[in-house]
Length: 302
Length: 38
Image (cartoon, rainbow over all chains, first blue to last red; front, side, top):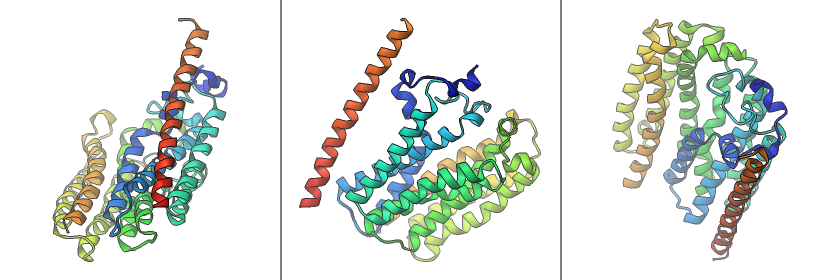
């Protein structure tokens, strides 16, 4: 039976692509990009080899966290359409291989970052991996609809790590970038949770859309957008970024706000017809890429 | 292709990827060492 196959399948059957899939490559692209932007936006330059190593370690650390997340969540992944094809629920890999891979990759990324770059960035990387695995995956995800609010901090660490790798310090701008990703996570994930709600119901995950209902979730998407917009504009308002970032931020946040209002006002119940929610989810990814990209462009121009 | 052949094929592919990864790490560690010494 496919849903129980992850308990019995042999490691020898796992393909190298299955190990790659365990690292959640699509999530990793956003993590790597924000980490790279944190590194490039820093006022001090870093040797390209060490910069590459820092970004590689951020990617490996994120991959380790993704692997450990899939190791722990194989049972609920098996009952969700979106995740049933992952290596563990699909029975292409045994759980122990996933655990060893995740722990090994995580330890390697932290040690390499500590030895090659600096201890501060390695310490933040270690905290981010442990936060994602222990606080989000093990503790919060199955217990509270606030799971992704607090768990969102795990995905917010990369720009802080990138900045710390380049400078060896933590300053106001990377903390704002951390806060931006932290506040961006609820509107991003709750938009998704609205149109894959049946998956979360089947898996028994207490997402906001399951526990409080779509109407409250839509309102929360809008409410979290307000402080996110404020934080996104703060670097410009505080003089930490220039006009290029300021103008781009105004435009990107105005669009985000309009889409959040549309989600809030939507009363659609059929997931297939939830255009506003799907548009919000897709745009939120583009928004983060564009905003971080503009910050780097702004700092390079200045 | 039989089950055994398929498993062997996957093991070979995993070994090849592992060799490439280790080779890349050798190059990376060498480069880091040079940068740190300079």
